[in-house]
Each structure stands twice: as structure tokens, then as C-alpha cells.
Image (cartoon, rainbow, N blue to C red; front, side, top):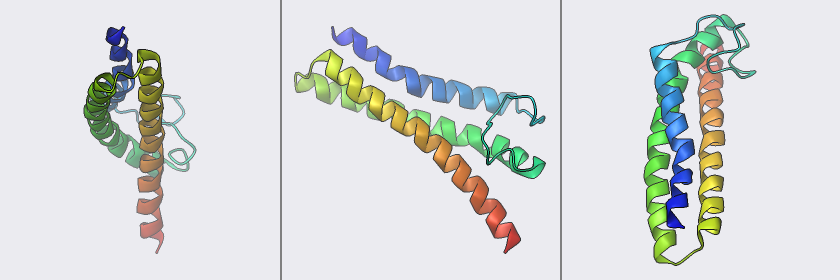
Length: 119
């Protein structure tokens, strides 16, 4: 059932889609529970505005990279005759890793910008 490997493309697709939606419809109200909403982004209105400006680009970039990696990974796993079940597990883990890294990267960039402004 190699067609199930299409499921590995859900995370990159959602990352790109959310990135484009956040870019097209930025959220200015930090109390709306929408937008890039983490503890770091809610520290102040300046943190919030900066987070809303950088998060879409980070998630779009990582989503595109993840899509290419998932494609290569799926082809490699198919050529190695790895079962679809195991390929889905590997692809899912890679996807979640990229998603977590997207949040880490965005929060790191926010902290870096405001740490530099204080110094």
C-alpha cells in the first residue's frame, strides 16, 4: 500500500498552508488566540507583532524543505522495501520534528531580537 505514503505530506502541506494564511491575514490582537501564539510571542505587543511577521516565512520555508525531504525519504524507503507502516512512522517522526523545530526557531528569533535590543 505505497499510496498511504501520501499521508507523510500532510505536515509539510499544513505548515505551508498555515504560513500563507498567517502571512495573508496577520493577527494584530494578541488576546484573540489566533496567529503564532506562544508564551514568548505573548510577552509584549512588540514581541507579538514581530512573531506575526517572522513566523509565516519560517513555517513556509520549513514546510517546503520538509516536503522535499519527505519525497526523497519516501522514495528511498520504497526502494529499500520498507513496509508502508514503518515508512509512515519514520515520515511522521520527521514531520513532527520539523514542526517542533519551526516553533523553536521562531521563538529563538524572537528572543534574539529582543535580547539584542536590550544590550
